[in-house]
Image 1 (cartoon, rainbow, N blue to C red):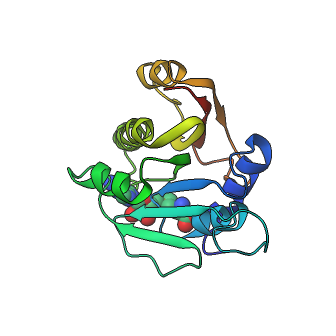
Image 2 (cartoon, helix red, strand yellow; image 1 turned 60 degrees about the vertical axis):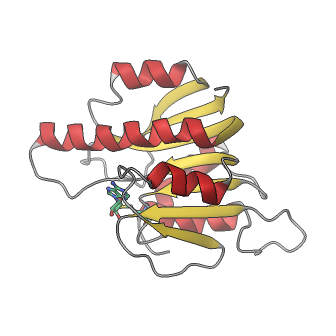
Length: 186
Ligand SMILES: C[S@@+](CC[C@H](N)C(=O)[O-])C[C@H]1O[C@@H](n2cnc3c(N)ncnc32)[C@H](O)[C@@H]1O
């Protein structure tokens, strides 16, 4: 696997069943590619299970990413003006799961880091509304302090269930956790 982060996504998928063969996934903050590798094998976009439906994985990151079998890559800043339209164009707005592990390098100033990651999470949540099929799922990294009330309320008005999860593979001293929203109804 390209990153330790891959094990966190495996755990989240084992628990919440985010992926099925044939699903379409948008992976935000995908580089260096650990989550993309997990998603590609679980939705079978890499054809590793012959005969099973073949899914699709689109990874997006500011940084370059080495090619991965079964993964399409877009290098762009999610907060840029053209980001949503480029992702929509490639995915046809027909996506079963939006997963975001986006994070900027930590400044060491807790409040600043929290605000920055929440801004990325909000941008991902907003985009997910344009992309997701009915019953789709959304996962995004947040920091302790959790998901802010406004974002939680927004997610709860659009998804059947919204929870926080801390995978075992996430270091216990790290304040990161994930918001997991399932059953998109728009
Ligand atoms: C923790 S890493 C992701 C690790 C990845 N999920 C994996 O499994 O290999 C966070 C990523 O978020 C990306 N990122 C941060 N801000 C971004 C933005 N505005 N748009 C796109 N990607 C962003 C960073 O470039 C970085 O590669």
